[in-house]
Image 1 (tube, chains in turn cyan, purple):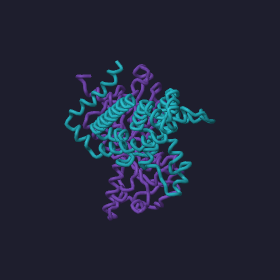
Image 2 (spheres, helix red, strand yellow; image 1 turned 180 degrees about the horizontal axis):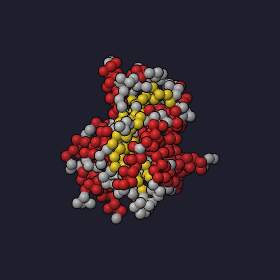
Image 3 (cartoon, rainbow over the protein chains, first blue to last red; image 1 turned 45 degrees about the vertical axis):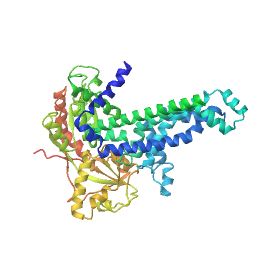
Image 4 (spheres, chains in turn cyan, yellow; image 1 turned 90 degrees about the vertical axis):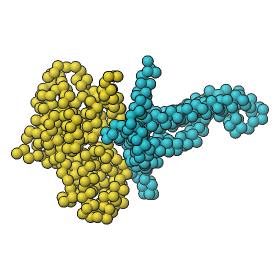
Length: 251
Length: 278
């Protein structure tokens, strides 16, 4: 029943593509700009999350330090905070009149209404999903395996890149896909903090919302595009995990 | 569902709207919200109104509920274009009040509303933050100033009026006035009140609103820059009952209240221009 509930709306989107206006609507400048912007911003967001989030997750999984519980809570808050509230929070911090934004403005840095603001909104809401799953992945690794490698003469970095990372890889990919999906779907934070402008801050979800009242077909076209895009990314993620899994087996 | 694709589409998009809308819309829950009461007692009247009507219609809501004991009025404010989409997708509602005649005419042509009546007029103005960081002293400065301008989404009435004003200014001032102003737009907002708030919060340097949007709430945070009379347009607001209304008499009663002296007084209080009833 759940499968039916999920597949029927998706099927409706696909069936709609038979409509003659569909392809024209999908290749409209609004749609293409939004798709490109969503691809760009989520790519940057994911790069930052992977680079900063992986060590953070490792530390959270392995190390004990004062204030760890506080850090854990901070990581979790954006996941339960409604995104529009996140947008207000970002605005109050980094907006032109914001706590930090006011000082940034003196330095000539303005964040609201920029693509950077979109990335910030995505980072804010999505990073939790990667860090949390990655930390679980790191925590689940049998420390004996790592120690055995050390005994066999592997250095600390060698152990991390050859043993720890490959073993945690499925968890990292799963976390990355969830985080990416969250970033792609980001709406409330973006519209409040970054605003909505074609090609600059109008990502797919904003474009869908923006065109819904003007042109229903365009809104559906955008939804179909985003569905295809998501599908492609999930397939790619699957492919990489499987290949990595195969390699780990061979090693 | 198979034989009624339209209603299926209606439901899908109604759900979408309900999930996506930033403002609280009562459209989807409009008819079920009453808890299944009797026709007259405990019934709900759902009024969809342009967001510039927020304060006036909220005030009239109280008046109406007093006059019609037991009726619960539920008002939903959004850009007129968004409201039109909701009506087109079959949202259960009783009255539609639009900030331009174009949206109303579309609804009329599609047989969604009864004969509309113009009930009020409004004047577009430009607002800037009280401290006016971009130094916009008069309308002409819009093209020169180093300013971040916001404007409502393309289909929203205020954006259409603003485009008309810019075209008029282009003809008058020349030098690509309209394009230079358009180039400064950094964000398109869902409706006129969202644009007004961007300026009130100091996030944007200027926007187009109606003079009635400069309410008590934001009066101290913004400064009004009048658009020269010869360039300006008059915003015309029509109201009509919705054909699918479950409560046609109550819907008509709301329209009558808005057109009555009392309704017009409330609108005038908020700087709308009452229509000449002669």
